[in-house]
Amino acid sequence: MFTKQELSQKIENYISSLHFPGEPAELYSPIRYILEEGGKRVRPLLLTIVCDIYGGEVDGALPCAAALEVFHNFTLLHDDIMDNAEIRRGKPTVYKKWGENSAILSGDAMVIYSYHLLAKSAGGRLPALLDEFNKMALQVCEGQQYDMDFERREDVTIEEYLTMIRLKTAVIFGVAAKMGGILSGAPGEDLDILYQYGTELGLAFQIQDDYLDTYGTSEVLGKQVGGDIAESKKTFLAINALSEAGAATRRALLGTFADRSLPLSHKISRVRTIYDSLDIPRMSRKVVDSHLGRASELVGELSAGPEKSAPLCDLIQSLADRNK
Image (cartoon, rainbow, N blue to C red; front, side):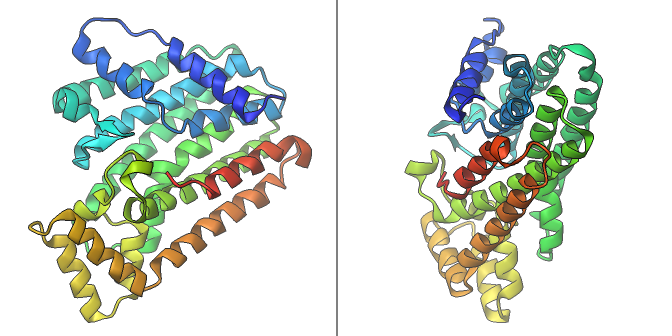
């Protein structure tokens, strides 16, 4: 079996080898720009880890892994426009560098290219892979719409929020794990468990993102801290705070979110103070740990056995320890 470092290098080498035409530059330069900036590559890593666990051909799985990464980065191009995000991975976002029109069109091209990569999957497994990929792609759009809808509401529940992040974020993790199983011929029962495992990772990942957007640092994250607060996003932290707060604290929190004249640094400070008073950071960590714990339980249900499945446990730990 390959080490995590070896799989990561294979993924990076393959993505670096992807060819995009030189012209029109305004279409393809943004694609090269965002893919070259790296990112965590968690989704393709998860796919290749699963493929390797079940004895699949990892090199043959790289196009499929890259398809997921290209699709994920497409969502970032469009999300940054919707969220008015100016910095990603320490550099200007695509729409700030090339404009909204180029970011939209380059994102569209990335969706098409992700299917081009997916079609490179050999054998009779392509129909199953396409079915999973198509369901995931539509669910991500549904989740993004819910996310935007929530910005106009003050009564979003935790259940609604979890549904939204499952669709917007977690399903890509779930599909990554399941597609790795499909490519390597994993038993049908394991495919369902792998999907659940990936989904639990994705839920934990997004709640961590919510936490880090408020309590992280720009230097470590590579993007502006407080973007969710600036855009009044209904994050795990915000929804729990609004639920736990008394009437006066709730009014203060909503007023802070709505105050467009308040400098962002002051807004973040005020929101953090309220979150701290309500013990929201501890609550967030507890829920992250719960999802990662469930993911660990699911690993134990796989037919591959504990020794072969150990890389999936290592991935859980790496996500538990992440600070960006």
